[in-house]
Image 1 (cartoon, rainbow, N blue to C red):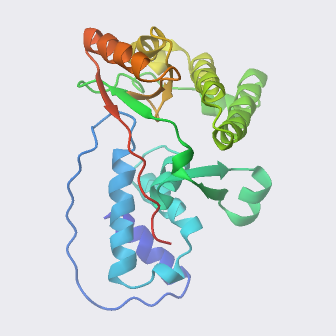
Image 2 (image 1 turned 45 degrees about the vertical axis):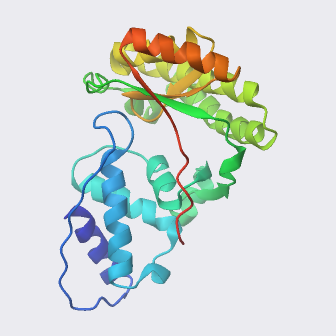
Length: 261
C-alpha cells in the first residue's frame, strides 16, 4: 500500500496519466527474514516493477529515481534505510554507486554504473537460522555524523574510498586486494557502531569466516555476512566445516541478472 501511494503521488506530481483499472497485488518471498538481506525493500521493488508494467509507464519514470520511490515507501512505514540496497535491486547485477554530495544535491540521486558481474569472484553467504540481534541497541552514528564528529566523518570517508578501491580491484580481478578491503569495511563499521549495536551473533559470523583466512563483511545491517575465499575451494571446505560447528548456514551467492530499464 505504501508503494502504491508513493507511485500514485509521483505520477500526479509529474503529470503521468494512469489508466482507470483495478488490480490485485500479492507476494511471496524466499529471502530469509531479519538477515540484513533487504527482504522488505525487495518486495516493494517487485511491486513497483509490477505497477510500472501494469500502467505501461516504465519509460516515463527514470530508472535512476526508482530507488528513491522505494525508499520513500519505506519511510512511509517508519523504516530507516539508505539508497544502496534499493539501487542494487532496481538495476540488478553488479552496480558501482557514487553518492557524491554535489550530484546528490543537484539531481537527487547518485551516479549508478552497471558493471560486468563476471568480474566477481565466487562469493558466499553466511547466516543464522535465528533472527539477527543487530539493531536492538539504538545507534547514534547518524546523529554523530550530522554533528560533525571527526572520528565518524573520517571513518565514513574511508568507507566511501573502499568502494572506489573495490571497483578498481574488481576491474583488475585483484581478489586478495578485494578481500583486504572487505575486512577493512567491517572493521570500520565495528569501530563506528560498537559491539552492542553490531551484535555478538554478527561478530561471531565474521570471526568464523576469518578463522579460516576468508574475508567477510555485512550484507546490510546485520544478520548475514558475505564471504570471499581468496584461497579457493580448499578454504571453502574449511569455511563450511567452521560454520557447521558454529551453527551457521553457508550458500553460494548467485548474482541477479541486470533488470530491464
